[in-house]
Image (cartoon, rainbow, N blue to C red; front, side, top):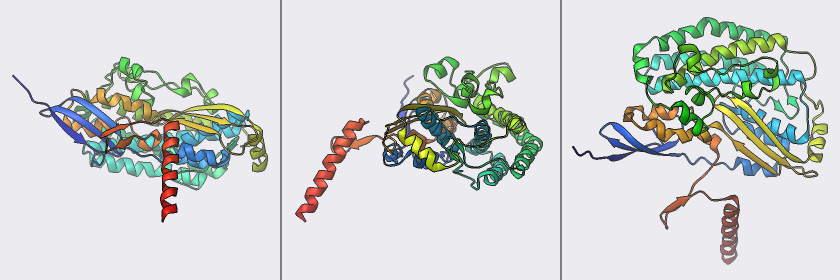
Length: 413
């Protein structure tokens, strides 16, 4: 029997997508047999803008790479600068960094779990999750003064200390989630419709997760024990061990589907609560920054030179920042960011195959994509009917040509 294949576009604007992603699905009836995915073209030139700013000013650019992972990006960047300038962060500052990172993880996972429920039409669980999310946002506001983009990162430490009031607020939040979050867990996991809707959807086998360099909950949901906090501990994680959460340790088997990725994030919320409690119990006394006077810090950074590397485990996976400082230059010479979405997006075409059209938005959302984090762009030449990625040198050449052309035209007016 002959079958006909149709191409169905989804996105970049779609009611079920929380990020601008375009997918061309090759379908036979309702079944997806092949797929091509192009992430959205959100390009803000953040990496390029850093060349006109000093290392301290770039912190605020790093925070705006992603709203939900703003602290993760700023800390990875700060670690890269500290590595290049040979700056040692005080132990108390390291613990406070880990504290905020775990608060951000709780916030991110609860938000994603809620969005996943919305993707399958489970609006009651969506609203319950969004209500639970408010508690951790209130704690972040009490600690930093902001609910998003916390402005707590400093080169050499942090800007805000944990006061007795903040300590009490965080402990109250831990108690709140331990008493209330199980209702969300039970409402979702014990619902047979949810299991039927998520099980065997968007499967990413373990071998393919390794081959495609999947990161974070996307890789751990496929049974890969990959967590930077465990493999390369930093800050408070050097004293407080972290074990990567994988489905086989809790459920005896790995499916590598959306349900496994869902379960990993659920369990990581409980893990973060334990880590938060351990961080508060072990919080040492001492300074929170290596530079009580920011002017001294800027002077040291200006005199520093060389490459620096920073990598931390963000809610979506490991975030890597690389910087280059030139001795005597006030501004950052080079800054490169690799976010987990850039790696996890490669698994989308494989996840689609064998599923149905109704699963498409859920599969895209299952890696918790952040297109702004990817910070890449594709140029399209409509006259020549072609598109492609250009190098930095090609982009600079085109920019100069356009600028020269514009100046000629202005001179003629």
